Structures are given as structure tokens and as C-alpha cells.
Image (tube, rainbow, N blue to C red; front, side, top):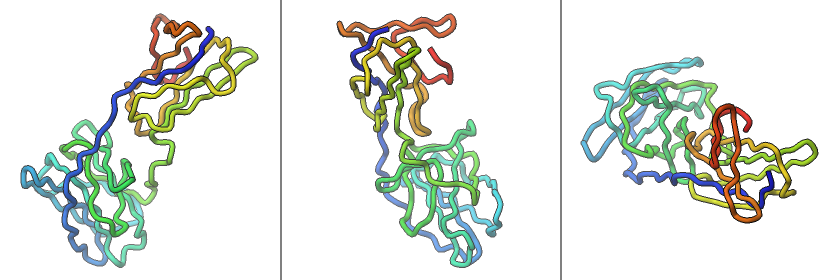
Length: 220
């Protein structure tokens, strides 16, 4: 397999810029999770006394759909950087944006509400002292090309847009291609390889033969 460049094809993600919810004051020892939708005038405020262990809660009063989530950490709560997560009705973590940050766990930091990528119903809320922000590679895709004596790793830093690049370091010939995606990359994203004649390269994985390749956790 001789490749001249790697093409990355994906669907761009967009974030709704819904207005931030007005911050609600939490009592000094409590954590409040505030869910709101201005479009439907729906809201929920769920509170609990902080404990240094994971806490799972159902939203009080309504499951949405909501546009924003805000975390309000009381002044006496030991872990001021506590993060919480909202799960959809299928149990998958929801993605939200605040300023330049996109994540699946959300903090207070005195910066107001996070906006969900799309208005979403919330099945449950988990607040966990072990939660940490998503790393800088959350939107990255890494394409690894290899043969017995050659290798190339090409990184696409922003998987929210279509991109193409020549393989880093070598154009082959290669025998295998493997795709690694960041935590916030669409799991359906697929990449394509083209040869020196700009023709799509065909590869096999098990019984599957294709010209576009996904992560899948297996090597082509």
C-alpha cells in the first residue's frame, strides 16, 4: 500500500450558544446542579450535601430537554474544583461548551453555565471528586501507517472539520493503517488514504473491505 496523503472526512460539530443561566446561590456545604432551557421555560435544581465520594442524582422536577447546565459549589465544600457529569436517557455523557472549553464533566469556577451541544434530556447527574477536565487531545485524530521497517504517525488536531495531510515522515510503502480518536471525536468518523495517483486505497479488516476506515479498536 503506497500512500501520498491521508484525508480525514467527518461531520463538523456545532455548539448552541444558548444564554447562560443566572447563577443560583448554593448553601455553604452544598453542591447545586442547575439545568435550564429558556426555549421551553424548563428548569431543574438538584442539590446535595457534599461528600468526598461519587454521588449520583436524578434531576429534580424535570428531565428536560435542557440547554444549559451550571454547577454551584458552596463556599465550605472542600473540593472547589469538583466536576459533575450529565447523562442522557441512554446513559451516555452529554457534551457541553463554556467559552473555549468543551467537556463531558463540568465545574463551577465562578464562570456560569455550560451550554449543551444540543438541547438534551438528562437522566442522571454524577458528581465525582475523581473527574478531571478532558485533555487537549480530545478532538484529535491520529492516523498510524506501518510496515515491517517503516512507520508514520499523522495527527489531525481538530476533528470538527474536514482535513487532509501528507503522512508525516514517510510516504511508504505501508502495509497497515490504524485510526485513534480523542474522547470527544465522533466515533463514526472515518479516514481515507489516497495513493500517488489520487486513487482511494482499499484495505481489509477481517471480512470487511473498504476505502474509508474507522477506529474500531482493531488494526486494518
